Image (cartoon, rainbow, N blue to C red):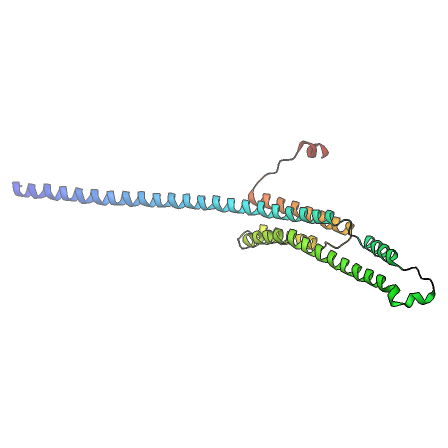
Length: 228
């Protein structure tokens, strides 16, 4: 074989080796980039799951805090207006009427406008008192419970828009108890206490569902273990 042919063979072998090396390097780099992209995607997915879990935990804590705040608000209003009962109102009206009831010297005094005018003024004052009391109760309820309900339903809207069906179902079971308690301000004491108990049980059930959904384990207190 001539020297020229050997030279061309060496050149061809060098070029082939270079091309093959370039192809192998490209394949290795592409494979490395694909693995890196997969690792980045996995890291982003884990980061999103962590952030989504944190948002869900924050929302659950917020809705429980809002429900508890409503419960405490109703209890505070009930304590503030505990003395404004219907028997006390009738007793007050009777006292006001007896205070201004004229002592007639004769039967004709009972139909004398001049004699009964103070009694009419007392009746109007009693009506005005009842109106002021009703307005005060409505204003207190709106001022105390209004912001608390707005806070609760704002968190409800955020959580129910998600894809967590268990949490959404638990919220839909909790919300009627919250609304029922806020609408029972004028009910009897026993009825309000029953609604408060129902709300506390609903909150406990919601907390259990949320813990199960998040995979949290609630530790039992020693006293609870001894009770069992």
